[in-house]
Amino acid sequence: YDSIEDYQKALEKEIIEAWDLEREMESQYYKWRSVRNFGETESEREEGRKMYKQAGPELKKVRIKLSKFKRIYEMIESGQNVTLTVLKVGKKETLEIKERE
Image (cartoon, rainbow, N blue to C red):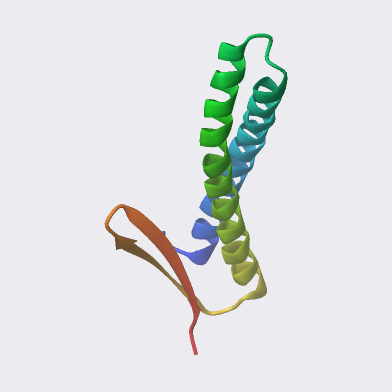
C-alpha cells in the first residue's frame, strides 16, 4: 500500500467481508446444532453432529480474524505507530502487532 489511508480502506473492505462471513457461518453453526438435536431421522442427526463439530472451529477462526482486524483498525484510528508482521510456522500464520517506540 502506498499510504496508511490506502491500507485503512482495504482493511475496511476486509472487515466487511469477514463480518458477512461470520454472520453466515454463525447461521450455519446454529442450523447444524438444531439438526443435531431435532433432525427427523438418526442419519440427519448424525450429519448434524458432524457438521456442527466442523462449524465450531471455523466460526472461531473467523471471529479471531475479526478481532485482529478490529485491533489493527483501532490502532490506525488512534494514530499509534505500529508494525504488523505475519509470522508463518508450518501451515499456521500468526499476526504480530507491536507498537513502535
